[in-house]
Length: 320
Ligand SMILES: *[C@@H]1O[C@H](CO)[C@@H](O)[C@H](O)[C@H]1NC(C)=O
Ligand SMILES: *[C@@H]1O[C@H](CO)[C@@H](O)[C@H](O)[C@H]1NC(C)=O
Image 1 (cartoon, protein in one colour):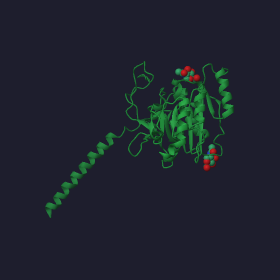
Image 2: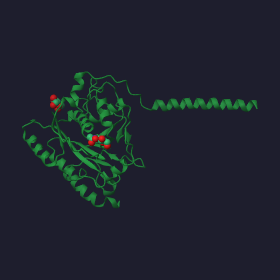
Image 3: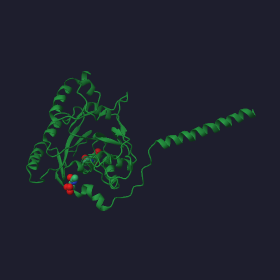
Image 4: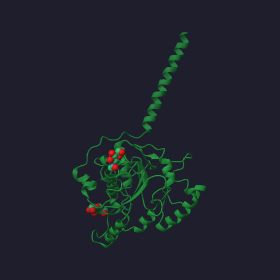
């Protein structure tokens, strides 16, 4: 009797030691807790605050009396009319069965207001009613400003959308598959795509993605979703806008969103198939109808290619 009691005690001690140990391993492999945020100075925040800029073109009523299931938000340069047209006539067209909507987000073209690019853009906007423009210079460096403008637009003008997808114009989107996957996804605090969890700032000043130590002293980035295309529940838009008051602007818009998510303690979710295939293919991939049918996005299409691929894809992907 006594010895069995003793053995039970030993087992209990061993088990609790194991528990403590595994808890330690578990917690040390999850990410650092988010830092206590400290607000940016007025000057630092002014740079990317949507309040700094004015709408030049807006569509404030597109979501009135309407709660789209999925809103495609496409950042695009003002002069890329062909890319917008390709999107409108492919995945950007209203999806059958579910309410979807596509809008394009632009800054000012070179030459600004009064330039011929601006005149053409305004003409296109009158024809299609799907262009939102703010008065900051449209450039690669300013994409973070554009992304924050998109978050602000979404929370102001279309808060009842279920999901939004930030997606570039040169992407192939398998809309029906995406909608099918989203139908069983969380409705809140959800962001998914191709998660990059080992990102580091490039200090080489010749790199397109260069970030100086002054701007970002840490030597790693928190997990973020690749900017080519990511999908999120709409409740995150106002939360990311709020978090941006604590995060200094860096010119990498997808990393920037990751830094805001870190402040919010929201972890982006990898979008994978049952066989763990990444469904947000951010590399270029040779077109094959049945390969594309099993992916959500594929990267790297010029407008004529997108039209061409779409034509074949819509014809026969359901038989894959
Ligand atoms: C969103 O939906 C709620 C409840 O369904 C409604 O009261 C509100 O007016 C809607 N907001 C917009 C901007 O459509
Ligand atoms: C970003 O936009 C602001 C506001 O228009 C402008 O002053 C600045 O030069 C732009 N930066 C780049 C790198 O284009």
